Image 1 (cartoon, rainbow, N blue to C red):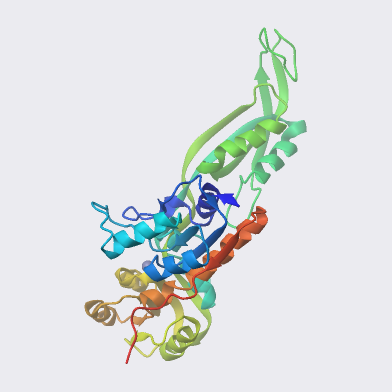
Image 2: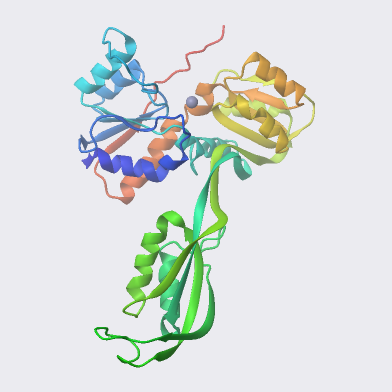
Length: 371
Ligand SMILES: [Zn+2]
């Protein structure tokens, strides 16, 4: 058993809220952070069928991709579908949490899941919506303790540049100070100016972990009053955003690529806009409804753009831009997230020794079918 709050914290790690679009409504939509959770079900949509499944399987929490409460509610009419759903959820004491555009953008989120399924590499966000704020930490430490401080701040997460960790720079110099009455200096004595061989050690770190890094630094720094400075940087850290662009290993025709994703995704068909005969190497994608990024995909040199919910005029725009397009459906590009999210939560649960069960919705169906 865990508290609902713990599942919310796990979701914050998987899909940080800061990555959500402004218009979105992620987070705990129904329930109490203090309520007890024994079983979670993950899904794409909170439908009546899903709630029935959750009740039957005795789940006490639903984690969905689409927020089932999206616009402000002015009434809860239990004779209408939305109100019926809320009544059923409250009656069954089921909490509902959603991770929507934050899960789309997150590292390892819905779009990365598609990249993995389609074996894309050299992946980057198609539309960058967030870049980590960085700060610089400069700390003055006696030479004898420079290594210990450098390792401690590296372990706490400072000094990441790309795939390199523990990046730091140090320069030697002299530190001067006068211990005054009431101090107990590690070096020097009260009333006399001390001059010590010190190192100025500097590194970069994301703004949001600065307290943790400073705590780690102070723990091993020998001085009673450690001298350090933190200042903001104009350079940005890790970027995140909607959609992805990457490359496939071997060039494929549009038809071959379409057949491949049709095989992989839970779809009976995909729709194609064939704008040219060129082979596909660079693929841009956006899960769900992402036709707004057709131009971005073109600008970034994609040979193909894959998304869902493409309208007639958007298909025409793709042709005008000489961009090949596949509409694999909103459901098709997002339904696999239920299983992927359950996997991530199960991993987190094992790591944190949670004694709960996490399952995923296996009954969801695309409302569209073809005859
Ligand atoms: Zn969606």
